[in-house]
Image (cartoon, rainbow, N blue to C red; front, side):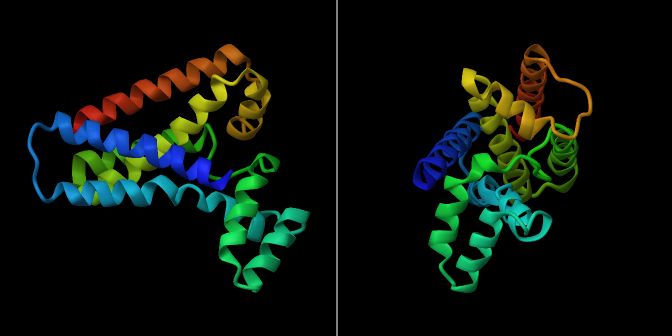
Length: 183
């Protein structure tokens, strides 16, 4: 499960980075920073899993198992356990519908104000990671409820499937618009 998850996120990120590089119509060595930022940002949101297990809900069984593996310095087993049990965790800090617009505001700021290709790659890859997870859940019929649980858990009203689709489509359009600033 871990290899599949890593592979799918890397594949999407590499395709996105390749497309951005191609659309810029010129290759410069400073694009390496965009690629490095993109590779780091791809997995930065997964810190959510560690926050959840180690600090927010340390009393859960999986959290105790993760802590035990970390104490024994079995980091590869820790990552495998987190990947295998990721559907048990719903209330993340960064994988939410309320965090995503904030992330897009940060993306806009980084793209328009800093000029840092590493920073641009980092924040845009984080946004792409979240968007990829949302689209993947949206197209999987049996996971409609799962998307509602992990993405909209902070929203106190019931979010229908059509509202979920509209939100994901809106976020996709905003992401595409932000990419125009990167090109």
